[in-house]
Amino acid sequence: MTTTGTRTAPLSRRVRRIAAGGSLILFSAVLIPQALLDPAEGGTGEVMYRAATEHSAALTVSAVLLIVSAVLMAPAAAGVLHQARDRGAGLADVGAALAVLGGFGYFGIALFYVVSLSLAGGDEAEMIAFIDRLNESAVLGAVAFPLILCFGLGVALLPWAAWRAGAVGVWAPALATVAVLVGQGLPFSNDVTVLATVSALVVVFVHLGVRVLRMTDAEWDGVPRVASSAEPTRV
Image (tube, rainbow, N blue to C red; front, side):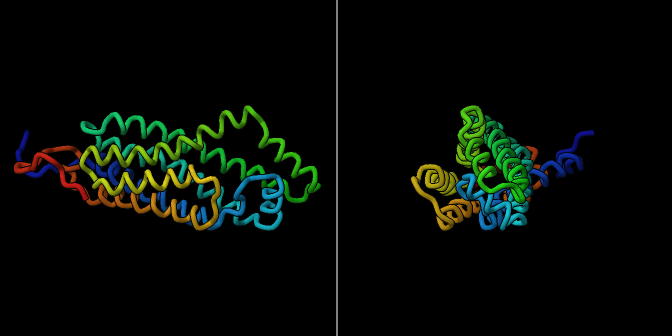
């Protein structure tokens, strides 16, 4: 029997909405403690050996947080895809694909950190030479660096898709784009710039996640309201 009143979404769709909203918040939020704890900035042999021997706990936690962010990237991207089913669909498709590839890149960094933990206890010169030789691998660079670049491109494009869909104001994609350009384009980086760019991305994606969590079932399902405006509200 069909009714015209308020619909109650099936539990599975509600769980999907909550998972998407929570993932949008958490995939980005965990990058703040990761950036603060990460003892492996630069990733050279000397840096990794020192991190493994003197800051093994921080290196381990940093790797775990990168894995959490990587795993949550797919449902987070799905949250934007769901909202950009019409306007912004093309941007959402490309952004989601790049973001998920970027998640693989983050997983690869985490694996590099985990492998580097085994450097502790080894001969310092040999361990440093091994990591430096690994970093110089052309095959590794051809696989890893494009994936890491995909993360930045993905998190820059997804807010533009959300803006095209009417989910956010233009401030959100503009802020995300500036953060990515600063993070990827500066010839130098330090703790301040890394934390600033990550925090900017967190602001954008937490806003998107909270919006998803606050949606009604009808809004999430794309059911038009009786007296809806031509353009959705952008916040």
